[in-house]
Image (tube, rainbow, N blue to C red; front, side, top):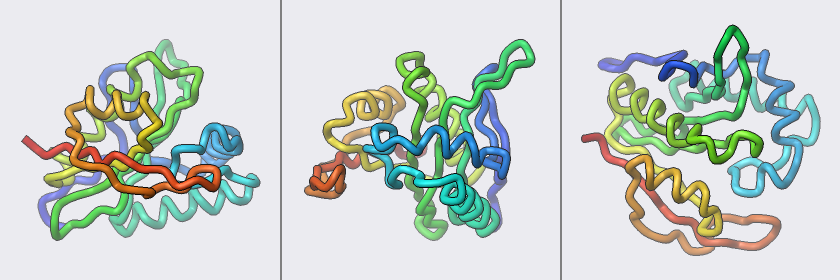
Length: 182
């Protein structure tokens, strides 16, 4: 791929995004085995450690094919590293220079600005290094926290996708929010 630079790690001082690895299997399983944590995610709860292992393996294969880039969000300070969530660039369309994004953060780290800082870093990767022009996200209309985070990160609401998400067996609308490279 000409004109792009795949970034395996980026930071803003103490918040780091790093390429997902096999060492993250247990973290993903422990974090995403609860349905409450996965309600608004595109994947359901991880039912077993093996399920988590397959997921990470697929993420790494997609990375190597430049189809999707998954990062672990870490806080690093005083030589201590704490995993707090994950962010992805997925459904990348290299011809039209656009991508989707998704993020999850453990509830104990909510309301600390981590999501907004993470999206700022993923925008740097997408726009400055991957030479993409557009990032979009589909956010459940009831997910007020995520809607606020994306809007605070410069994303604009473009429309409503009717009955787009199935959450606990109920179809719910999603907001289409997007950010264009400036």
